[in-house]
Image 1 (tube, rainbow, N blue to C red):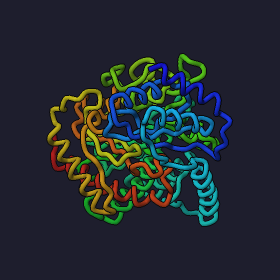
Image 2 (image 1 turned 90 degrees about the horizontal axis):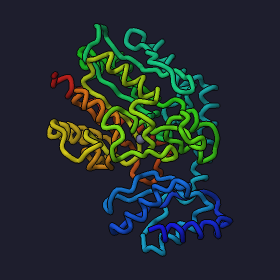
Image 3 (image 1 turned 120 degrees about the horizontal axis):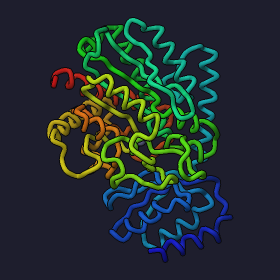
Image 4 (image 1 turned 30 degrees about the vertical axis):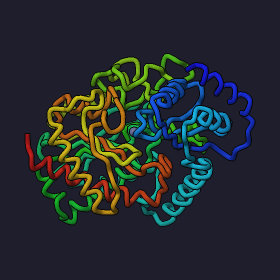
Length: 424
Ligand SMILES: [Zn+2]
């Protein structure tokens, strides 16, 4: 195997001057076990600087890799030499990044002029936090802002609490932005916050009835340090940051994958022990302050009945387990709920979601948050991978935010209603 990699490394060195306008994202279609093996080795070797947007799992699932322009010629040759078919998913990442940034600058200007918040735009952390303050001020009878602790870089971690009163009522948890580059999840959560508030105010079913039975806790930015980092510069290195920003045992590599750090079969297969890997699990379970803050908050509350987390991309609605392929005890019910929720989602724009356990749908993952929630007795635990299926990947255009959020709301609303109707 090292032979293939050695040839690739050589090609990379020879052709690193190849002129390309920017990085590309390649969609790779492995056709055999041998192909999978070769790709896995590439994935493990972080020194190549390839950015795997989706993991190498099986011949069923394509693998999307962002390839730095200096490596493009070499990796394309490498794939051809090994007869591994691929297509170009994004021809010029830089072009999309430029467009995204221009739109954000233009939008910020418009928002300043009109003094209004545009839900069809991506926003930085400060703007999202200001939006939360305005929302709380406008709906103070329903919403309060809870500070659940600080991040590694000392930023506040805020949760919006939607409650009609009562002490520690049964509750629903929804978070977004665990992985910093998945901007559609933050933007969706922003829209959701406004929608829940508006539906309550205007007495639109089923929100008032759900809130009469349960509280909703919504965390729009679960990884504030990572999110700020993705806004820091136009460079791909920043925009596609996934992890937290904590120091690791390797001074060259920062950050822990906050969805591999939970105390749920931590350290098992489906997470890396290499601090430079995108799915680095961290030195110990809940070593990351961001994970610890959320876990403590949920544990101290003690009455959460549902835990949902929004990610992107792939259009999947998943339930436990991630760490193992055996069925969770509530698998049949969870599968039914997820199926109905994905049908509700589909009814709006026809967007198709795949449903299944994390292990069987996407990949084996240890230390994931939904497994943690489920193993601690929160039965209705689900993970969403929002749009798209790979046309834009993490660079979903802002004009898809509202339609993505609205269809996601249909699924969430179904699940919340179901949770209310099935107390346990
Ligand atoms: Zn994610």
